Image (cartoon, rainbow, N blue to C red; front, side, top):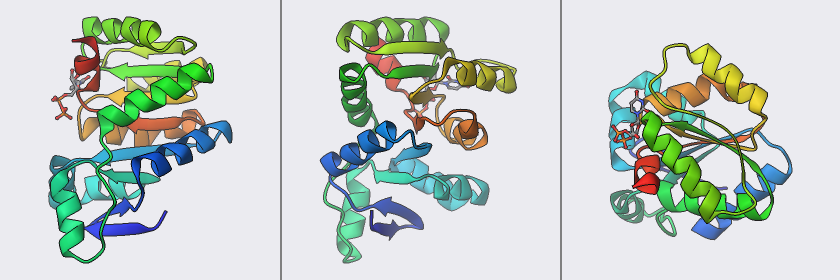
Length: 192
Ligand code: UDP
């Protein structure tokens, strides 16, 4: 994708459908991918924190998850077609993953929340294989990474909140050739 810089973050110039189609193709090709759906808080944190900015810059696809980012791009004369939100993208990807019998790992949120999210996903997206799950309040991150590696996921959704989820993905994405995506508080919404 062509990228558009807004406040120092490079966003993909893509519609929701173009973005999703690319992700699906990447999954079929077993590509290792890191997706950031960047909301204004993430953009501001990246501006204030050089280390976090570098982590976000290392993502393969950063999408504009905020109307302010879309407006900013418009004003700068490099328009972005539409907002691509984390939650809606996650739902679309889960639907596709079910249709294609893909393996999904859910990482993050409180134990009872992630457990409820697993059940919801299995009911709502038949065909999906939840290959593992882990709450987001762990001590030993190497052990969690090993759990993910041995689960052989096609998709890893990390709901650890930002910036924690992006740091985790950047550090451990090498353990599985999967699509890795930070999804913030999405498991709480899903479980609720
Ligand atoms: N979370 C987690 N581990 C942590 C901190 C947060 O798993 O150490 C989870 C939290 O339970 C929630 C999600 O991360 O499900 C998002 O948290 P928050 O709303 O604070 O962050 P944001 O949505 O703003 O990224």
